[in-house]
Length: 128
Image (cartoon, rainbow, N blue to C red):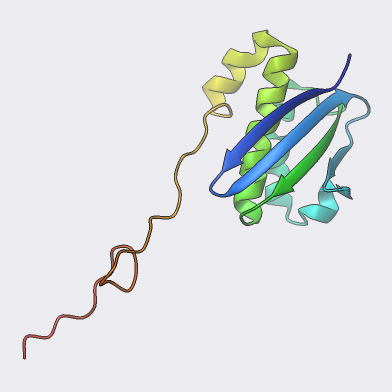
């Protein structure tokens, strides 16, 4: 099996994933997963598609990850891993899709409007 690559995005984060057969090692920007994401919740989010299919120790995953914050990065990585697993085995698509791992979350920060301090917040109204 050769390398399989996929891309995942969330907010302004972009994750490029290279999946190959191995021992289950996840390397993000040349760092270990537990070193890059110290929070157990974020590590859980990243491993969700692997745990769902029961292939946690089967593949080595190398990731280039940039942009955004840690939450957006972890969710972008989850999407990229799910897409790579579908490229590897098309029969897993329904399982991953039912869990919502193949849906790109398009929510992003709304832009600030002129004449207002934030996107929707307005300056305090003064009658007199």
